[in-house]
Length: 323
Image 1 (cartoon, rainbow, N blue to C red):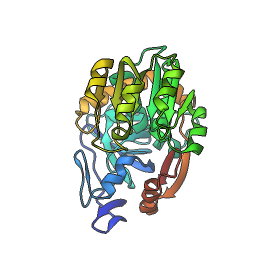
Image 2 (image 1 turned 90 degrees about the vertical axis):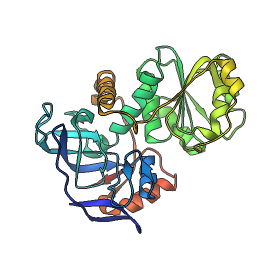
Image 3 (image 1 turned 180 degrees about the horizontal axis):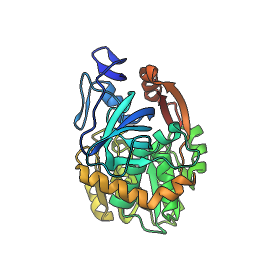
């Protein structure tokens, strides 16, 4: 099969072994795959959990048709249209644990649209509802809201009953589009007074829950913007892996600071997260209420160009590879 493979010369479109499903896995004939920030690290030779290094097929999510199922798989059969988080998704075929996969809604959802959803759904539902313990009527701030994951996060927050949803972007044009995806107040974190805007929007209380995809560059300001007994869920580190941390402010606000990643979760934990997200969100996904914009599509053979487009950080929404 053909795939986008990490080599010493960068990501190349080349031949790779076709995978075979284990007992608990499904083999997907990939029709479309979607890019995520972690793909940039893998493409540059770094590891992402157990994935990485020369010979690695890039990609974390895809959509397509089930080609074969393992002996223990009961919920899928060959021919089913599916979407799933799946390591090595930038290929003609990919395998994944059946507990990670969803059947594509029977409406008019395309493979390209479906490929955008799995990582965002499981990441943001877990950050908001699982780790973040979102309650109806609470306020939410999504840091890095113009990414695909961020755009879906704002919509999920609204769907789950958040009273005020705020989202940040440092780009004025992208901030102007956030309102179409559930954002009540758009925040520019290059303005040093942005925590005051958050407090103003929440009647002086501060925000109940922050889902942070930026981290180091906004950490202390996050705590300033948070309510007493607020929660901050660290999902990503686009602003840096290390930074200043005001321990006294953390204590004064009695903030729960929670780190999450799928890299150290067991298959059982991931299956539980996927099942919980499906229970809360699937009717809204089937109806199109929860959706993501596609910024641009590339053929699989141009995976390197698609990764460069993501690295340039000029996109709004998801970048998709078509197989």
